[in-house]
Amino acid sequence: MLKQILQIIFPGAEEKNPGTLTAYLEQVQLNLGFAYCGVLCYDDYARKLVAAVKYTKNRELIPIIQKAFLQYAPAKQADFLIPVPLNPLRLRDRGFNQSEEFAKTYAAFYGIPLCGDLVYRAVNTQKLAALSPAAREKETADIFQVWENKQKLLENKRILIVDDIITTGHTVRNLANALARYNPASIEILGVFRPKTSAPAA
Figure 1 (cartoon, one colour):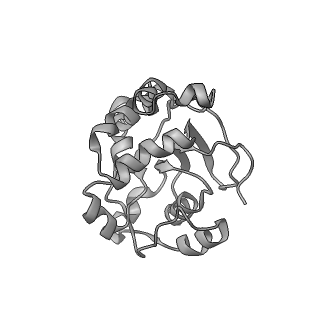
Figure 2 (tube, rainbow, N blue to C red):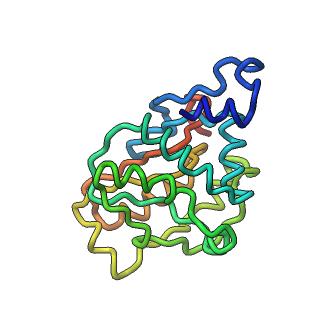
Figure 3 (cartoon, rainbow, N blue to C red):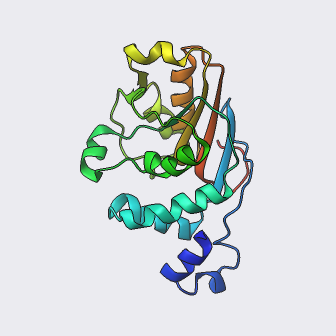
């Protein structure tokens, strides 16, 4: 699905770089400290697709990514599905949280409650794409907090975190650590897009 759409949006890409549009399921070791699975390959062409969603606010592309994600994502059992919260200022500017949008179809298909109001960003970070792994780690440290009136809801619950793009994994690891303080039964991380390489993150 994603491959066909990208071939329409970026004609000739597959001929120039065979295999770069392939979307498939792969377990990647990112040393997150939590169970993790990335789904779609975040290659150059997927990057352009995501950029069109995030930076030009092209919401018409969201269902394309949702369908491809659902097609390749493994079935997970969870009590809550938590999308990674967006920077509030960025949310106001963009008008939507892409991680939450990508997660909606998965949550509905598997009957998992989508909970975007359990956790918030306590710190507004700068854009992470251009930062080194070390700078990302520093920028994302302790940025998430669970709302005080929601903390008890996490006890003994199976939590599934969904993020749009997982590269170094610093953001989702810090979110998982914030949730882990309230004694959930388990925490798993599901990335819509995974790194091209399966090598451990620095």
